[in-house]
Image 1 (cartoon, rainbow, N blue to C red):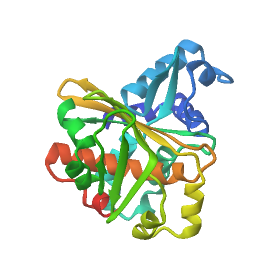
Image 2 (image 1 turned 90 degrees about the vertical axis):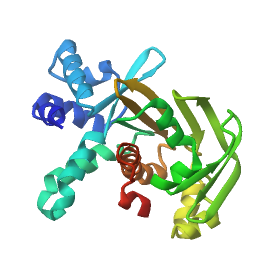
Image 3 (image 1 turned 30 degrees about the horizontal axis):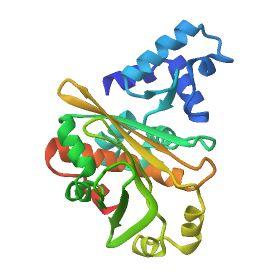
Image 4 (image 1 turned 30 degrees about the vertical axis):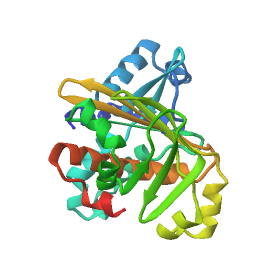
Amino acid sequence: MDAAFKALADPSRRQLLDRLRDRNGQTLRELCAGLDMARQSVSKHLAVLEAAELVTAVRQGREKLHYLNAAPINAIAERWISRFDRDRVTALADLKRALEQPPMDSSTFVYTTYIRTTPERLWQALTDPAFTARYWGVSFGTDWAPGSPMTWTETGATTDDPEQVVLVHEPHRRLAYTWHTFSPQWAAANGIDEELRARLAGERRSQVTFDLEPHGDQVKLTVTHEFDASGTLKSMCSQGWPAILSSLKTLLETGEPLAEARES
């Protein structure tokens, strides 16, 4: 947390975060445009933000895209905000929401966290249905081979669709799959009204990717969720991912998931 507070103390770095809040996933060149800062200075500030985990850089071909990362702010919220009346800490709460929610013109949500575990154990937590049910409340039915169908079981409802498939399966390194189908059964089990369900069902199917990278006694986990840019799902998922991943981290590091994540 010290690194996050130090990074946020600089107004130039806060300005860069504001620019990413307005439009996530920018290159260094795009971030430099219109700023009264040298390219080298912007690059140094981004390095500090990355070291503090407030920004995550993702390679896309020869370009390096920069995204806001909610993990440090989420950690601050878990440590202090939950102990007090949230109305009395509006400034921190507003900052947390700003970093967790992607801008309206962004189609990608990126979240990076460091978990004290092994790649093998984290991989099991992402693929073993008994494990995912503990921190997520969802269990998957699939053989995990690329192209294989997936079933999602959540709150007693199972969704199955030919477009629910595994996209990438590289054990202990990368996992990707398409998102579940918004069926009437799923909606009824989760208290979703028909109007919202129909909106979600009409959007382009999203996909999520998990990248695992060893870092000493920890594993860097980066979750990238790509949405229909004009859809409703991105707002719902970008608010849900921090709780799910915090619960995953807590489960792997303490043996018990967060109660609030299990209940959501």
